[in-house]
Structure formats: C-alpha cells, structure tokens
Image 1 (spheres, helix red, strand yellow):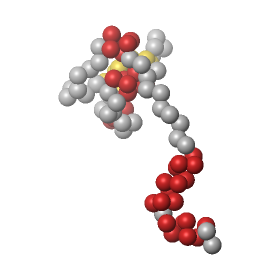
Image 2 (cartoon, helix red, strand yellow; image 1 turned 180 degrees about the horizontal axis):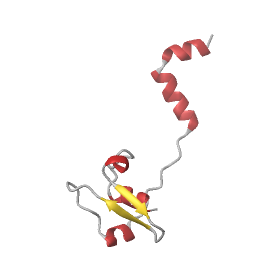
Image 3 (tube, rainbow, N blue to C red; image 1 turned 135 degrees about the vertical axis):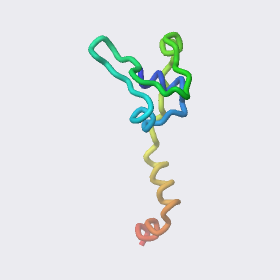
Image 4 (cartoon, rainbow, N blue to C red; image 1 turned 30 degrees about the vertical axis):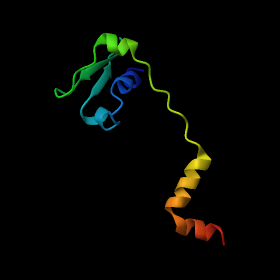
Amino acid sequence: MLYDKIKAIYPTLTDADFLDRIRLQDDGAGPYIAHWPKDMQRPTDKQIEDAKPIKEKPADPVQLLADFLKENPAVLALVSK
C-alpha cells in the first residue's frame, strides 16, 4: 500500500527506483520509508495519507496480440498460411 501511494505521488518512479534509490521497510509496526534519495523531495505523511493509488486498467489481451502482430509481420505471415 505504501508503495502504491508513493507511486501515485510520483508517477514517474519505476520499479527499478525501489530497488536502488528508495527503500521501504516494515519492522512489524507497518511500512515506512527507510531510505529516500537526497535529490528528490520526500513525501510528507499528509501526502502519503491523502494519496490515492492509481488503478491500472488491465491490459486487453486482444489488443496486445494485435499490437504484437503489427510489430512482427513475419509471425502473422506464418500464422496466416
């Protein structure tokens, strides 16, 4: 939940940022920010409390297949034989 709220505050963060720049920790009393980069403004408790996690729309499998086939016409040629 803390991860999702931070992603809502800073939508440009990637999963890689949480591997090497930002460290969340939970010692049993709930998650907290254990490490935050100095070049970014750390979110306040109020910002975190008010953040609404972004609900990602599930990918449409048909659209994913269509996109794949557009990007890989050789596969489409094989399938259509």
